[in-house]
Length: 210
Image 1 (cartoon, rainbow, N blue to C red):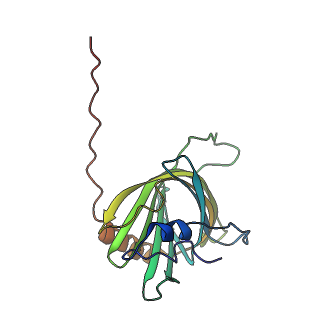
Image 2 (spheres, rainbow, N blue to C red):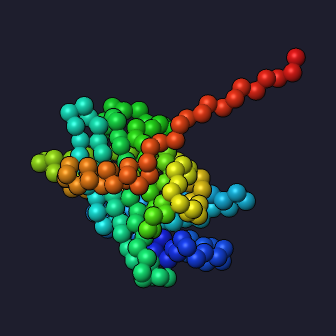
Image 3 (cartoon, one colour):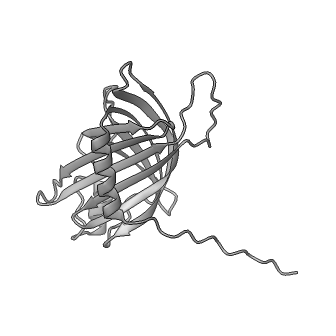
């Protein structure tokens, strides 16, 4: 199935076109495919289901148990073949659930998520948190798992991209190869594109009249 983002043209956009490119029909895939499903929520209360497969999937982990999973997709736009649409997803898991021992409930999180979509110098990131389960093969060279649940919201922008997803839920499954060099290279590129995280500003306290 073609990428739902392969049609995007950041420089020449009309509302009808954006509505058309975000209509995607989900289909079944093989167990070893790395794929993500996104439910995007609109301000009017309606939602759209999106689907994306990733051609590159890499992971690395350290002695403290932190896992970095990086997914990458680069495709030419079918609307304008001169444009290349790139998507990079970084999932950092900071603890691993143990089957039969870890209690799981719907609001639990063990990973941060950053989803970048861009073309040329124009980039938008959707970021949030989620819950993943995973396992390594005998040689610790292959990783398979599930993104059980996740919540995303637009956070960082470079240029003037359109907000394609808004508030969104994300799920999916992945099969990745261990490649620390590739993980570091992709994460370095992601940081250069997005720049630093914006400064957190706590909400102002609301004082109720006495």
